[in-house]
Image 1 (cartoon, protein in one colour):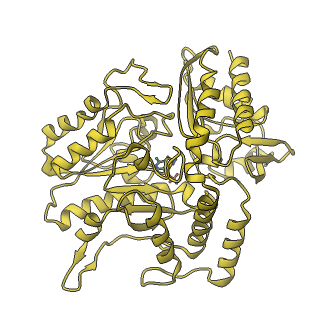
Image 2 (cartoon, protein in one colour):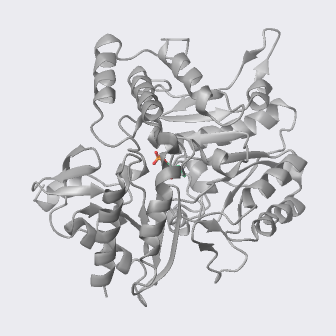
Image 3 (cartoon, helix red, strand yellow):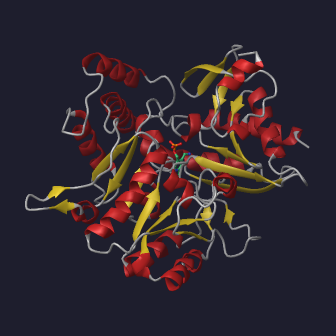
Length: 438
Ligand code: PMP
């Protein structure tokens, strides 16, 4: 892979990130909260893989479950029942999902979960005789994967502009009322959430509620740089959606499975959406899988005919794949036994104190955190947005920590098994990198 042609053959996702001009930095093995590089260096994983390896790397229990499952039943289609595992998994998930979000539709990724959820929302209204409800509403700076639906409701401009208009009938809620406001401090959501959420009323006034199917938001926007919602925002969205018969979807691909110190963000914010999308932590990132959870009124809207069979013309060859289900079940066992879904509540204050010590470093303009996720935002270098973030990221890697950068924001989301001393080490490496970066 030291030859350029070999490197180019793999068209990397989000290729703009391929900024290593020399040979790529390869991770070849992993254990616990560490990766090992091809040249034998240990790297502290400050981003849980890609916000997914919540139980840490190299979990024997998952390895063995996957191995066993591959030997026993490698594949069975679930289009006509198929095999027992998705039933077992869906019932296990119903025990930990918020409220009555008790029905699971299985996918293979976050992007697929999002597009599935959007189709559920439109199908739901149509099944209830409200076929005019086709409009979908996302939020500025929201990230919902890269399939057509998710790209369309997504609000990160750079991810959209190459692809034209994408789907029609999409609007985006404003991210903040005051673009200059720095509204996200010390893990305490700023005020003004209800007022911000009232932006939804304006869209309803413009289009009429009878044309709107759903609103989708990330409870905490991860990919845009760990943006916490101002206080009361999600609750007010819920109220407005209820008033107008609009479905509310929480995209919990990042926040699901313990990231905020509660099993789901819906638990943390105490707001129950109609639909939740997940992936990543469902299988500890070990096997591709996603799940969409819906409440009974959503599920039941799809019941058709005298036998009340559910009718939903959507699904994947790998929906409920036996190996993915086995990995998910083993992951849920680990989460339960080690109390990982709430560990962020205990460790969050430690991370908070550590990252807030970075506030006075040069270029740092904001620090925010919740549970086991934190964002450190730096002032962009004039004329070179993102350059500082990339440099900090690279210095961290050279000094033994993998951290995510989005533009000039460094995001930390370590595995939920991380120990306090390791948090200190991680944040220390980030601090050194920021100090060393002009
Ligand atoms: N939604 C959110 C909130 C995400 O953070 C992501 C991935 N970072 C996705 C959807 C897409 O997931 P995937 O990359 O598995 O398709």
